[in-house]
Length: 217
Image (cartoon, rainbow, N blue to C red):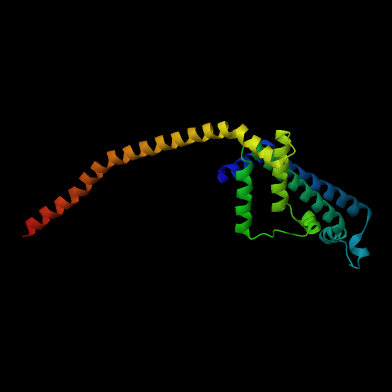
């Protein structure tokens, strides 16, 4: 169930078209930076202003990026906010498929495997963590369950949530188990059909070896 919850989370990224959004945002940011650099290259002589003897486009670009460091830091903050928002949205998509509790369990397992901090500083995590901390994500999952069920009490909302998706999940997984068992049966029958042939093919070299030994004698 935990694997299905993670797959539903990743499908949420696909359903929301997060990858094209991220690519478009990166391209737009690069366009703005080089557009501003074209103005700096046209109206200023940055290498000479910083003590270089000859103008150079490469040196101008290097100096421009150094001067734009505060702006780049603000753009990095926007990237962090964007990634955090799409991660929360993908978690909500997984919850909408009925995987609230498995998603929380899977996030805990991933967090333990990665050795992440359970109590990071809120300001540092807000500025540097593109993926939200574990406690925030699980709290957001619980809050969305309450919102989805329109019940303020978390325990009652979880019970209503499980009752709502119980039939859907059982039927979905029953179909998957039936198909898996059918595939395993077909694979077993194929192995049984191949085993006599393999036995015959393996016995033929042994018989040939015996004949060769008899002829040598």
